[in-house]
Image 1 (cartoon, rainbow, N blue to C red):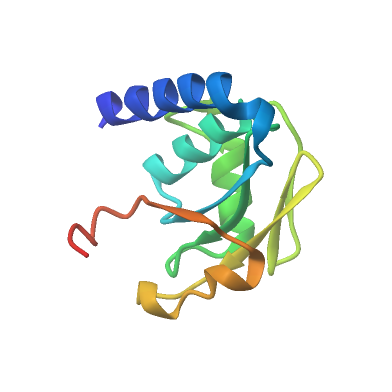
Image 2 (cartoon, rainbow, N blue to C red):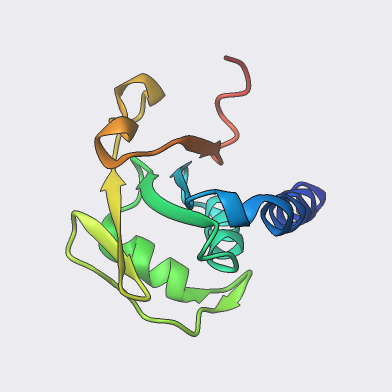
Length: 128
């Protein structure tokens, strides 16, 4: 799993260093906000001009607990920025991220918030 995260981080670093001057930030959605989803979110925060996380889906975690886990992550360490929630969105460093709670990925309204790419972080959906 850590090799996947290193690869993802290296990809972002190379891709955005090379192409960021011609592109608007890519809008990303994260499906699953467990250990991997939170790590992907943190990696994206390292490139605020290139990547913008606009939505998170996790049917098993309420917004207040998402905020708590992201802020006080026992695996990745404490997040030093600002994290809050109103139940419908997660606010990280002043940016609002839409929250969804759908079990079936087909029912997640990614397009309603402008998601261009989705990072599947549940480990459940391994095929198309």
